[in-house]
Image (cartoon, rainbow, N blue to C red; front, side, top):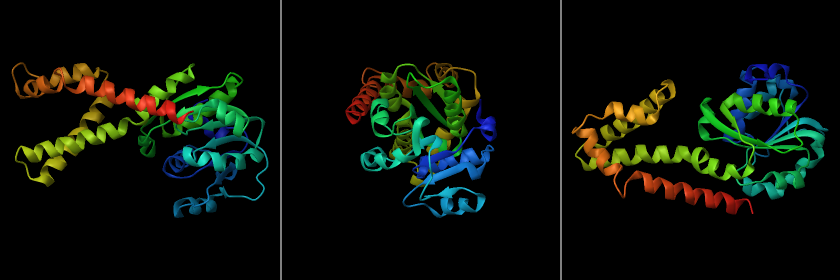
Length: 272
C-alpha cells in the first residue's frame, strides 16, 4: 500500500492531536483520498481549519467513538501522561497505534494505549509534503498494518523503516531536529553577511534563498552532497577559502558530531 491507496484503507482512522504536525498529516490524508467520514479527530483546542473540516465529514471530539482500526498519536510528549489513558477506550487488541511523539518508546505506548504499536519520527517539512519520517514496528505488528502506517506517513513525505528502536534517538537528532540546524545556517549566514558589510535585508534574502535553493538542488540531483559541494569549489577560489575554515580542525564536522551526540542523549533521557 502507498499514499495513493489511502482511499482503500480499511476502517476508521482516529487522530489524537491536531496541532502543526497532526494537522499536516490530516491535510495530507484527505488530499490523497482518505474518506473524511472515516476520520475522527481528538483535539481539545482545535484550530479554525480543523473545525472547518467537520463540513467534509470529519468527526471532531465525538463522545462515543468506539473502537477504531487505526489511531495516530500526535499529542505533545509532555502531555501524553495525562492524555494517553483517555485514548484507551478507542484501542482494541488489534488496533494499529502509530505514534509520532518524540522520546516515547514502544513499551510505554503499549502500556498506556495498548494495541499494535508503530513508533515514527517525522520532521517539520511534513507541513509542505517534504518531510522525512523514520518508523519502527513492534514485533506483533502485521505486514498489512505496517503497510497502512506507511501509507498514512507517506502523506507528508518520504518514509524509511528500521528494525532497531534504539536507532530512533539518533534519527531524532539528525532528521527530527535537523530542520532547526538548517534554519540556524540561514540565520548565521545572514548575520555573517551583515558583518561583511551587506545591508541586513539583503543579507537575509541572500541567505534564505541560497539555503532554500541549495536544498532544492540537493533534492532534485542524483549527486551526493559532497559532489555538489566540490562542483561549487574552484581550487584557490573564494569558496575554497571559506571551506578551509568550515572544514578545519575546529570547523563544522566536529561541531556537528557534538551537536548530534547531545541531541541523541537528550532523546534517550526523554524516553526514560
